[in-house]
Length: 199
Image (cartoon, rainbow, N blue to C red; front, side, top):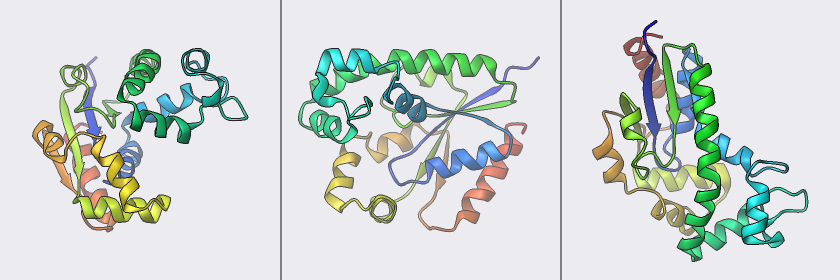
């Protein structure tokens, strides 16, 4: 049996990356969402929570026992070492789940939806192609404001903690420029990718 194509998908906040993931899934790809897996590890009863409580203290737990995301977000923005500590707890758990989902896939194309694909050196050798969904910084800010109500300063702070746009584009094998809000553009791109990867 032919090995499935492994397509890495990434893009900055507000780029439309998640929309492209949904469209590729609708075309028949198996999408492995690293961010969703990561979030599950920090829900109430999640696999990361005992180590997070032990390392950071109960102050970083919400009332239901899940991670207090806003408090942790503020903490890691102010303390880069805390980000690395949190990643050392969560990343191995995410890696285990990704391997399990990969082995269970029967699709001819597996899409790895990875926000930090460019930042993480271990990802590129595991992928056949890297797909970057790109848009201008102004579009990112506008979309995140419309979606989440964040002000420009908050969105820009998140953007600064992601890989620079130029790095993502340099790492890309395929780029979809998504600067308008016309979803038909992404739909056409998804169908073309589906044909290219045997879906």
